[in-house]
Length: 396
Ligand code: PLP
Image (cartoon, rainbow, N blue to C red; front, side, top):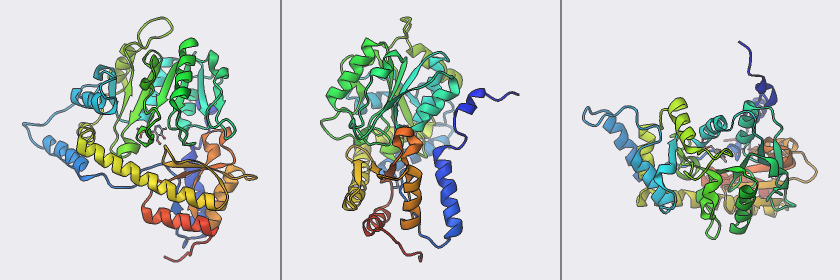
C-alpha cells in the first residue's frame, strides 16, 4: 500500500506529543521534581451530580430489556437537538439544522470531506492545529494564513482570504483567548458573504464568552447563509472524555453551485459515523437542563478564577499577558525567547509544563499558552512559583 502523500505535509510529531517527550526527558533527569501542568487544555474538575445522574440513568437503561436501545439516529436524538436549539441558541437555530456528534475534532476532520481537494482554506495563525493538519491531509493547496498578533489585537486582516473557499475561525480563540466583538464578527460575516466564503466557526469555548460579546456566529444577521458552527461539551461541561459535540449546518447554507450543503453533511453522518453514544447524549440532556447549566456555570467560573490567579502572577513578573477574560487560556509573551526556549525555562526553573505558542503556528513563536484547567491548589502553587521566579522544592 502507498502512503497518503499528504502525510508528508504535516509534522510527524503532534504538538502535545513533543511536549510529553520533553517532559519525560526532564522527569528522567529530575525524578523528584513536582511538576505542575498548565499545558494540555483538558478539564480536570469532576462533573456535577445532576449530570452524573443523567449518565447513570443512561447506563441503567441499557441493562434492562424494556429500555435497552441500540443505534440511535445518526443526526442525534431529537430531544438532544431540541435541547441544544432551546438552551444554547434560545430557539434561534432550528433543531433540524443541528447534528450531534462525538467531538468537534472529529467533526473538523469529517467536514474536510465536504470541501474536496480543490478548495482553498484560510485560517488564523496561531490557532488550534487541527484546522491546519486536517486541511493539509486532504489537499496540497497552500493554506492562507491570517496572522493574529498582539499588534493587531489578535484580530486578523481578512484581505488575503478574499480568494478562499473556507475560513476557519476559533472564537474565543485557542490559544490567544481573543473573543470577537459584535462589530468585528459582523465585518467578518459581511466579508464572507461578499466573497462567497464558507466560515467554519469553532465555538468550543463559547461558555467562557462574557456578556456583551457574541457566543454564536448566528447572533450576526446573515451568518446562516455562510457559516457552519461547531459546539462541544468537552470544555464547557467537562465531557472531554465522555465525548459529545454538535455542528450546525443551516438549511440556507449552499455550495457555490447553489446546491445545499446540509444533505451532504447528513450523508457523511450516515456514511462515516453512526451517531454519538447514547450514554453521552443522555448526559448531554442532563447538562442542558436548568440544573445542568448551573453546573456548567460553576465550572466555567471556577476555571476563570484560576485564570485570574495565573494572570496576576505573570503580570506581577512583568510579562505581557493576553487572554483569560473569555477563555480558560492565557497567552503570554516572552520577549527575546523562542517558544521552546520559554517552555524549557519554565520547566527547568519552575517545574511548570506549558504549551509552546509555536505549536499553534509560526505567529505563535515567542509565546506560551497557559491553561487554567487544574485544581485550585495546583494553580495557586504554580502562581507562587511564577511570582517567586523559581523554585519549587523537589520534595513531596
Ligand atoms: N476546538 C478547539 C478550539 C479545541 O481547543 C478543542 C480541544 O482542545 C476542540 C475543538 C476539540 O473538541 P472535542 O473534544 O469536542 O473534540
